[in-house]
Image 1 (cartoon, rainbow over the protein chains, first blue to last red):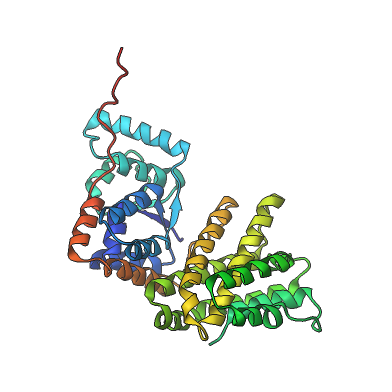
Image 2 (image 1 turned 135 degrees about the vertical axis):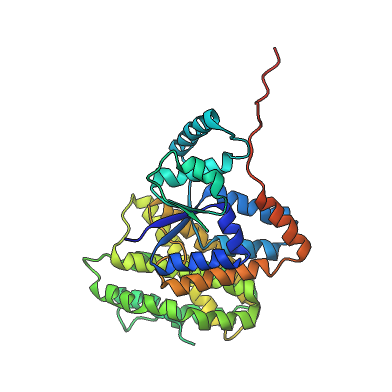
Length: 139
Length: 236
């Protein structure tokens, strides 16, 4: 059955660089008839990088023409609440520093029933282990 | 070059107007376009056509009960909008460069996705939302038809029209999203086509950066969103 994976920012940024391993995993995923989405948080992080490079309008537009290929899942009120719950649980068992974006991205996926693809397996594993029925791909 | 968007709009016209009537595109829009010298002139022609052809917006959002012929035409032409993209992009790239060409193709693809969904099932929503989507879809269709028409004749106006087409396609995408319709480009295309389009866009972006820009962008992507460890308390 076709599944949908939510790409985290590490995967999207490596895909933007045409990094070989990510491109191969991405290609296999699409070829199997599966879907892809990203979170609004990842769109924010992607654009943040594009603007940080002091890039001119042509390069910014090229960045936008890459981003436009992905459906963006909005971070709604329920997702924020779910992320807070995840953060609280993680805080009782270890670090949460520098994990807000990952938690929001994972909360978006968990709420919508999407699988997650990341290159930051260690942090996402801690989050996804709270919902062990969810699938985590390490691309 | 094949112009499937034009043929699709013509099918919509044919479903609504008698064959003997003057054709609103070939007899009216194109002659006005060919007399246009500036972007402002072309904008006026498109705007005026959008107003006088408002009825066409309704025809483009097919009522499956009434418009079997148009539905058949859409089912036939919409896949051709996909197959013509490589050739159209090549022509556009040679005329106006890769960024403008990609913008025009994304706009045409967004329109194709919209028609592909409409051909299966007309969107349902409150009238103001449907009216807005119809008007945006019609404007986008007209801009794409104009781009396809002008690319072989007058390159100078195609690049700014590609900007307009892209902006309008994103307006259509957002409006459709409000109705629960996903117009992500190539989402329903064969996997190889979708992969090719995404990787071409990736190379178009990353290849446009110099080493220093790549380093700065990469560093920014490596950072995480972080909220302050403790919100400041109001002073008492």
